[in-house]
Length: 323
Length: 245
Image (tube, rainbow over all chains, first blue to last red):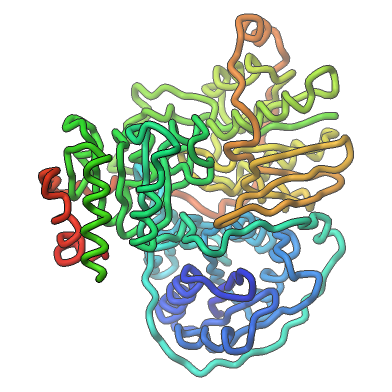
């Protein structure tokens, strides 16, 4: 028995959500009295791989096959399942990222394993009972899911579990899995990635705008505020439907569900569908000129006022604060 | 061309979510059901690809007879026929297995689903169906072009997109951008009543997961209102009190 964590690299680097997954997997290994092995696929420098030991991985299986340079979920799932079998892992952890969502279900089927996607807490393990809490109804509720299979797969939500130092000595081992051509049918032709921006699903701070901003030309102040805070920008559904902002920025029930440390909503009234996607944010700030906006009911801090007067004040105050 | 579209029967997006039986069951009282909004995008894309006699669209649902009105809605939007696999869906693993078992019995070019259902938000079914059938699955796509034998898809990733090429059968889960949602017209609604809806029995499979308890998020404290003219003080509150900046 052991715990296996898949460490997703992006352009040869690990992101914060990977260290969260490693810390989470290490905590489960401690709960079950076993060791943690990480599996990395793609070209990652030795130093980055060894850094995983800082968070409790005592072994890293390093897969560098050229065919696996880009993410192909079918082949990656086969590699991770093979690694799990090699390590006799009965619990497999990964980040609930875009790639994780395409990967975890395939791993689960390969290993006849129950899957909890969007886990928000450590499992409760009591005798033979294994339960994990996850988000459900787009953030309107949580569902405690019991995994009854021998092997279990957990996809951890970003920002749900902090990074914890748990240094152990780490051994990096080269791993050459059996690759099958049928798993390499889908081929990535092009990757477009803005690396200079904070990405929305794993951002710690999100600044979001709604129809109250009146038009796409007014997003400059939203971006300036987000830039000062090191935040990602987001928007409400009407805004992305009107093509003021791209769909990838739409947060809410039919967009992306997020749980940052700080969510600042500007000119968003707070329809139930929007609240569903953001209500698990730790601190919510609402700026709206309508004192009756439903969003104020779930906010921690509120400013009733015109965004075009309030936001520039915030930008000035933030510049002073940071000076 | 034949496209299978998996649809899920979910509570309307405005539903207030509550639970019964000691928070072990979703309270269905007074709940209006709809076609899962993402599945509607998948369906709209499938109809678009098949327009002009280029193919047929079959919707597949795993559910008991209570989902029939939702299936009829999908037929009204423009699917040609429907298959209901007669079982209450236990979890994504169960649902995906049933869809895959059905897919093995029929010819198809692609299977489309929504990116996730808005009730259990698993985002699991598409990739599981792909694995059960041992064919590629591409999750969370924003664009799909198909020339009759191979497809080019755009998949969402953190901060960008990936363009993926695939030939042969595949499964894809659809997100916003893939198509404009189609709205049923009167002719569609009338013809939906007479379109074939075949009911088949579910195949047995072991249980791997079950929901044992629901929780609602803890209520937040009262909002702290800051006068608009004193907006700058929010920054120091976020720093010293909330400790988030």
